[in-house]
Figure 1 (tube, rainbow, N blue to C red):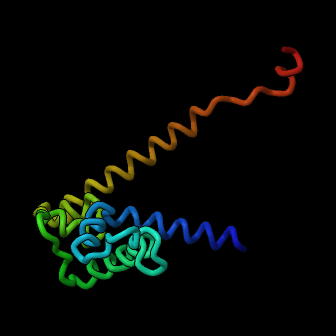
Figure 2 (cartoon, helix red, strand yellow):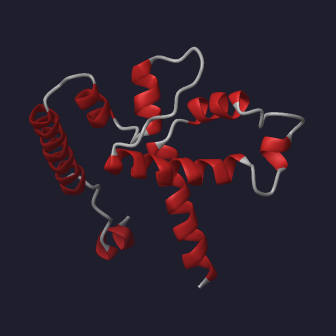
Figure 3 (tube, rainbow, N blue to C red):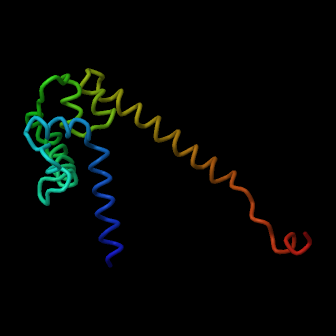
Amino acid sequence: MVAIFLGSFGFILGLCSIISNWHFRMMYAQQRGLLVKDGFVWSLWNNQLVDMLESGFGNIVRTITHAPIITIINCSKANEYASSTINVWANSLIYAGVPWYISVLLITILLILMYFKLQNIHRNQPLKPSKKLAADG
């Protein structure tokens, strides 16, 4: 039961780190004054782990509701958008002006190529030696 909980927590934290941008979050924490005297690292409620979970949830909510993005000093609008919403290249392409159907087409092609590559890897697995060959050898 503990392994399921820890595995689930690790999966959620990993997902949040994928759809967020840790460098952007550190600059945002610095702008908010949270990077003082190891507070952001060792604080119980204002640490990097909690911030990443909050940002992952916030990024999903901002993407769905089109809420205002986080703005920080000396950061491009494209980086602010990507780091304040789901930070994957397809989302950034749409923000940059690429039509959504082109982005979907690119994702579909990528998934098809991944599928065929996995099939190729699975098909070319090295054979395990049979017991008869191992006894002869």
